[in-house]
Image: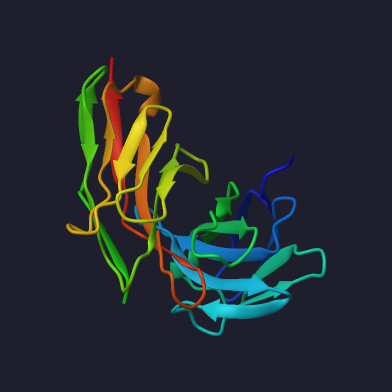
Length: 114
Length: 113
């Protein structure tokens, strides 16, 4: 059973550009969450998708947007990139929305903005 | 809002030493509590979890007990190995609203032979 997969592994962009990151959830999982992890920090919640809709959003600007497809895979889009957007972006999937459900993380996409 | 506080690192130990990493939380109601581990250059792996007060989560020799009275979830291991060197994150998931994880800042563990 494949775990959570993310692509690409690494990405280098320049300020002002746009980027799309992709995530495939673990088999049987329908809920996808995205987190940003700056160097030396804990992950910060960006948003969560369920049934193709954004269900909850953290404290991130509208430059960060997402999408979930019918097969539950998801994309994170960031527009007008800033230097401060450089981070590891983590996708996590879970089988539902119960408080006790575990979120399983992918390996992440390392984004560097120059 | 919900928050998690972890002891600052790095924690430096010799192999076979006893490990404690402190974690306390602030949350409404009865959150679920998690420990995740991150090895260099990798994503997060679930280490253990506890979903109600007095539950003990355990995995690979690591243990943590959900203490409601002290709002704590300290991570312990009786004998660490060099391979345990990693960053450890304590996290909570509230039991109201939608289920985002709230993480602490992480504690780096360095184990020397």
